[in-house]
Length: 400
Figure 1 (cartoon, rainbow, N blue to C red):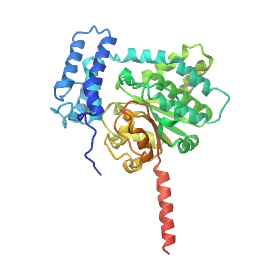
Figure 2: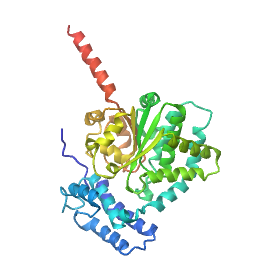
Figure 3: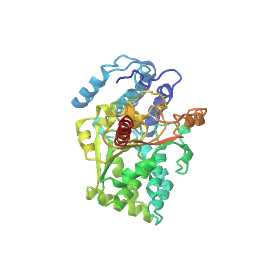
Figure 4: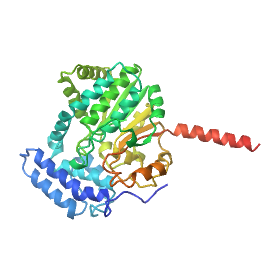
């Protein structure tokens, strides 16, 4: 069933604020943080900044494969204003334009590398805290707490304006507006393979890697597969080199727990119990309904998928706005395995909350977009189908 309710940069929306304020800010930050010496890069970025605000969508030039992929994607929206196209599509297009402007495909130089390094270095206290907890003797609710750390780590998003970022505090249980953690932990603890779609590097990646190491240490039969972006996008989104750089950063620390974490992660990668898979799909403006065959086959081996971040949440719902009280299972009947969505709210898309919860938070300005609130939302169609089957069987018995 198709719905014509894509999120677009309409007047007064967070998407419009993004186009008018956040995207130009991101371009300015790239110019400030990089010592570009290649001719034309700064003028390319300044031209793109002007284009965002005043021009139309146009084709872009890449190498043969990506040129064909993007040209096909752009055809539908070519010559549209940046304020007239679906928001998710627009963001992916913007970051692809950034990569072209800075000659990324020729130089492989990440235009966001400096910001990633600063975020990593500034998050050392958070790393100390979660490592100390992970390796402590107290095992009560350890998985629950590490998953909560992973949730709130999602606040560390460098694509947000500095004034819009919330501190990471794992004790904010009242700010979790959908909490399916108990059921999710039961599934995770029984899994033989868990796939995780990563989001941001820096503090969030710290929390994710500590969680992963704990899971693999606690279940010697488990394999964890990390899915990462092939190219830079959304400023801080993790690539394979960011995961490797983070583990190298761990190696450089003198803290005993962090050293133990680093050694354990390196061994797990060597043993192939921890695997990292990059794919261009995560850089494209495509939703989970368009999942390519290679990722589908990978997920067929998995017992559970953990999806990090706001953008992936939007992928599940095709970046469409639905009633807040709708049940997420109604829109993801294509999923064949349990999915735990760990996401702090940074866009105007959400389903599955109660009227009571909405009444409590809706008076707060920008409650959907500043990352204050989070969800730990489980999609498990097996449970739903089991309950439905039991209900139908009961109905039959009552009518005999």
